[in-house]
Image (cartoon, rainbow, N blue to C red; front, side, top):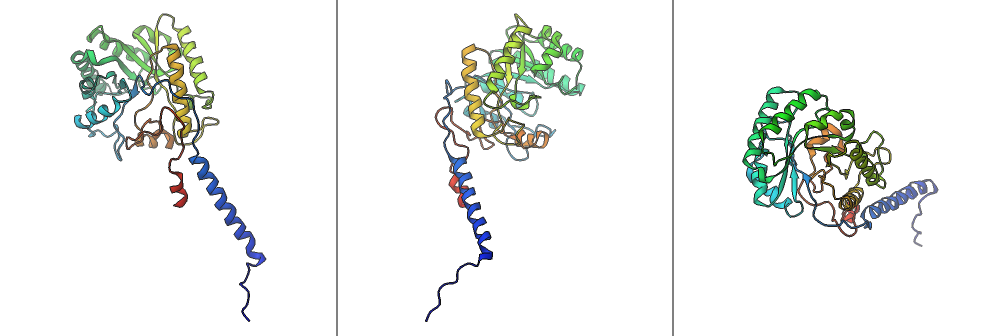
Length: 332
């Protein structure tokens, strides 16, 4: 007489139960990550301006003194970006980026051209000279020249030295090209006299990075409050948001949680708000920047609208999925 199959002993049941529960939990997580989330559509699939840094490939970094981005590579990037953006913002003249204005003109794009400043006086002089030459050569391509980016925040120049650099550029380039300086919004309130040196203010409002981080659900309301505050603080001066955005990956800061869905939500809601007040703006940024992870942690590398392979992370209209093709992760 054949014996019946042996049943698991009572002592093994908890282990089996834990495995089943873990499998169900894993399936639930992947299903949740792959579930389409309905979000308000952006008012348009086009965006006014986006920060452009080409250092998206493995090992590329602006801190490499020998780095050089070829005109062909910049041309490829701008040709693709011109399908979605009217303008790009750059941050420096070196490493091949001085070619951006001429190439952008080919695709009908404008440029917020950056001149990088830090504590290195010789490097600053080279950047300023190259920026002046570029502005003189391509004034029609420029929406503005931004002399210095968060150099006061980093404490690398004094307001007096920065003002001198800004005024040097202002005096040397065509009057038709406005000149600005870019920093976090609090620093404009901290150094209000800097406003006299620029044609317009360029402020950065990044709800994720605020001292009191703002949740994605309240982020655009925060931006609107800050923008209105800055307009009141500097009456008669045009105010441009030079950086705003949301990360798609990285550590949460209290209620400020990075995710693809939250990045899409923030960008769509911000664009809707910007359209209602008709303000100039630039979003950060075109491509994910892997090199920033060493400076800012994982989150620093994931502010791009496109990933490091130049693929869009999400659509501007319709539902958004945190992890497309989520079942591949489950099967793995």
